[in-house]
Image (cartoon, rainbow, N blue to C red; front, side):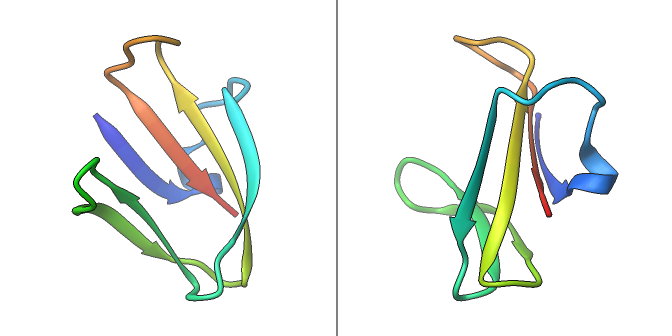
Length: 69
């Protein structure tokens, strides 16, 4: 399962495996496949966006949550 959403809505309450601030001049964030097909996309409010990623397994996760703020 792949989830993308506002951090207040998707945060599972555990430490993320990654936290990074991304430049988002288009005010959009997207998750894309390896062949650059958009899987999920969301609007963000600023030109920089804090992103946190949670995964249920370090090598082969089947549940990944991407939260943005």
